[in-house]
Image (cartoon, rainbow, N blue to C red; front, side, top):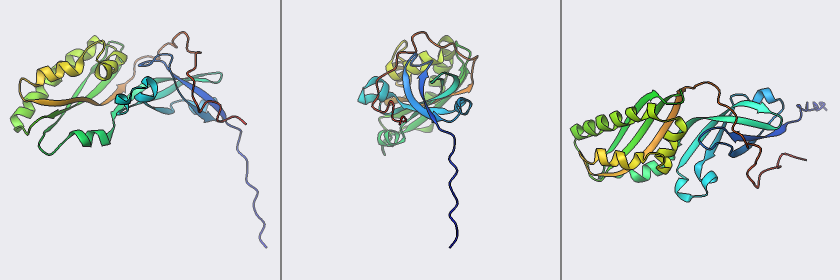
Length: 217
């Protein structure tokens, strides 16, 4: 009878509490295990905005943060990407409407080089010439906005309407060409990050979570 090979036990893993340093500064965004703190570097952490705000209307937005520093059992992560829920996108683009995707790039006020994808859905079907006109107007507006604000401010402006009511402004601009039904931040990515951000004060305040401590024992 063949002998069973004994399984090699890997090194014990420790659970690290992850905090955002931008978009939601000081916010606990989850926990992740690692056998070595070095293995946490550049690891991405996904966050549904609803889990932070408690607002069901924010279920459609997902953010990604990338860990860049570890201190004790705390890991710090910076924003790298936002994406709109695909099921939600499919639900708003209907048969008798037109979809317009606008891609804009620039360097934000904080030095991050960003690419922003704005999704626009019209109330009725429109001609290709109207789509081009909307795309041009919106791209000009978004590109003029990028250098005036930080990435954190841009994300919050699209999702929450502060400090700039981006969605309503895009609706106003685009409505001069065609009737607009929806405007959404489809995607935002950091193409080239700025210098490593500072750790915000007060980050030691953890947000209560039912999963906290699940890795103990």
